[in-house]
Length: 150
Image (cartoon, rainbow, N blue to C red):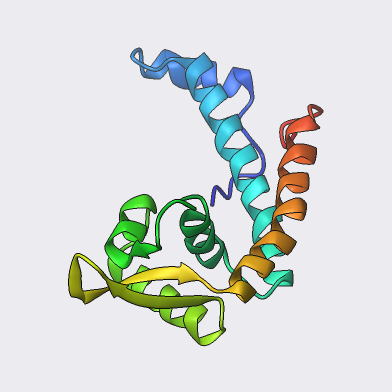
């Protein structure tokens, strides 16, 4: 999250630019605005996930499995490779989603010790219920163009 609500004015950035000649004030202003907007969107999405008894990480695990329908599930290592979280976090998240009945695992054909993680019918239903609101939040957020948090 980016916690700066009051972004610096152009004058402030120009003052810093005068002190730090390598600073591109336009790039810094654009980046700070992007960070602020991204943070506001993440807050909206986190509230949405929480209202549906999920977290962003749990949602992302479900979606990375779902987006590869031609495969018979993913290995936990493949899920971790697709997310910006550690393997232990993926392992814990998969265990929690399995305990909630949203994921299942089957032995991997290529390695009997490994397990392929799949969505259960309930996991598919939860995701199908969640996605319309998820996409609506993103669409509404991107349609806003007024102000720094737009």
